Image 1 (cartoon, rainbow over the protein chains, first blue to last red):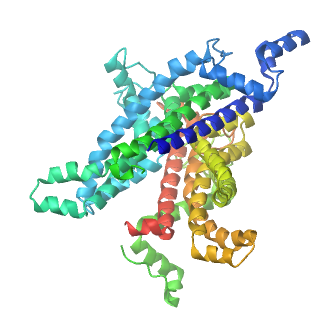
Image 2: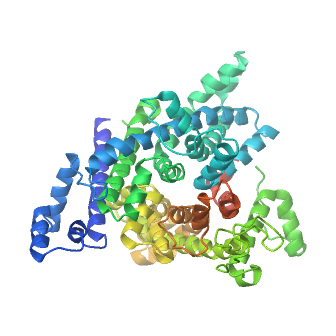
Image 3: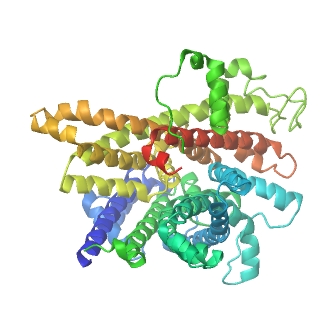
Amino acid sequence: MLRWALAKILQTAAVLLIVSVASFSLLKLAPGDPVELMLGDDYSKESHQSLMIQLGLDRPLPEQYVDWLARFVRGDWGTSFVSRTPIFQYAFVEALPVTLTLSAAALGLALLIGIPLGVLSAVRKDSAWDAAAAAVSLTGSAFPSFYLGILLIWIFGVAFGLFPTMGFVAPWSDFWAGAYHLVLPAITLSTPFMALIVRITRANLVEVLEQPYIAAARARGEPAWRITWVHGMRNVLMPLVTIVGLQLGALLHGAVLTETVFSLPGVGRMITDAVLNREYMVVQAGVMMTGCLVIFTNLAVDLSYPVLDPRLRPR
Amino acid sequence: MAVRDLSLPDRDALRLPRLLADQLRSRPFFVIAAMVSLTFLFAAVFAPWVAPYAPDFQDSNALMAPPSAAHWCGTDSFGQDLLSRVIYGTRYVFLIGFSSVAIGAVGGLAIGLAAGLTRGAVEWGLMRFVDAILALPSLIMAIAFISILGPGVDKVIYAVGFAMIGPFARTVRADVLQVRAQAFVEAAGLMGVDRLRIIWRHILPNVIFPLAVQATIRIAEAILVSSALSFLGLGVVPPAPDWGLMISEGRAFISIVPWISGVPGAALALLLIALSIVGDGVREQFDPKMRTNR
């Protein structure tokens, strides 16, 4: 067990190393001279040279990489040229919580609505309800999220004026205002996941409900809700946790677009703006941050299997 | 589920209308979705003949005009005909979709084969490389590539293609491992058949087909990511009639002229839904694992 966990952690470390090398190369491969970018149009050869030395750009690449990684781990991510603030503050302290809040709201909404819909489809398999849910979930999973966001803005924001269409209010400072502002973005981001959760829940529950132990529970005369929700759902939990864990990447992918549509100051908007402004250090920080987030979640999902399901405990 | 009859259909069934009617009865959604996708493809190939106007023709008498007899889907803020732009836009959609999936499939085949055929440290390293690619969401990865490459149609193709290598590599490797464990491969090895020949004659043919199925399924994803890039302003450069770009241009006018975003958005949504139904159908047909649990 310990050996298995250590092997997993070693794998994760290797993946982190590769992602960090890739992020580092991003800055090196980026077009343009970073020193020129910092100095502007008018500079002397000496100041160029001295800034090169000051930034350590004259040293060999491996040395620069180790130096960069050490600073990154300590939270020294450089300074943004545009906003003149430390990138760590901008990316980690300001943008990341916005993206995480949005993602959590979307995921919560998807689970809250998706699971009951999936259960209903499985229990009433092959009914008209099941067919309708399948059609809706197929549409939901294929629908481009940025277009859905625009449609929601048009219908609920502009035509009916029910919800705000842009901006972010932190729910931890004003919960209700925050939630109110998050309604449309959360619906936009959650739609594909809701569709996925309906499909996964239905498919797995249909299979589980055919098992002999369910028939035995029925024969004992247990109530239907108990059979579905207690006996049945326990075995649907595993695939659900796996999918939800592995979908974090897709969630962040959707967050990039949702943030742009609703003008939320999150990581996605940050990366997009940074590319447009040619701020490669911010792009790099964003790439590192999302990479680490996905990698650590995957590790957590992997390590949680033996806890969730005793049969999967490695010997 | 019903066991599909794999014997050759009789001559009568080979006639196209009959075949279509049969298919339409057994899987109506698949047939409709396939027809919708083919219509888009047709529009892409024959755009100059199908579209009522040139994509950049500006009708100064009809700025932001609502749908009418002259402009079936209305016009945008430059007076350009939206229907014509959407029709020309299908060319970008399919060009980027097909090319980037091709790049992803070829790259994934190379890495997946290498990872599946090697053992020990090399395999371990290659798999961690694939994990690293998969750790970044495809859109964020594509954005990172665009930040190095710059905007433009060809750059979008590379960026989306590179971002798709990871998922392809992972499935190819899984298939290679499965084929390699089969008795006929082992037998060939024991008979002293050359290693490269085994790969070429026995492993590759068994990997290519599932890869092709994967590729059909992933075209929709490539189209979604590329139009998202254009929507963010990082992909195809204006004034090209790219759907993502058109949706983004219409955002500013959403409260007064909703059709500027609405028309290209509806086209994108329709095509993606159709392609995903086609993809599901193809997978169901050819993936034995999928066939059993229906």
